Length: 60
Image (cartoon, rainbow, N blue to C red; front, side, top):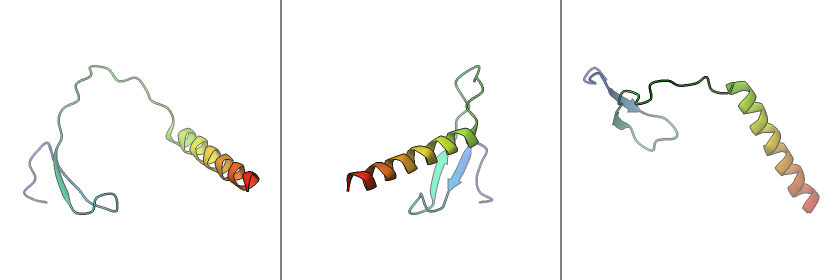
């Protein structure tokens, strides 16, 4: 990790089967509007997941 330069990253974890080295670039957009609230997105995802499960159970 001490050999990483500015603009480089090391990705590890369950999503990556093995450690991955990547180069990170500067953002190209000049303005980024405020995104949606992460908590709201997570709640919506869980609600949709629950609804799909209920639909499957009703179908069976």
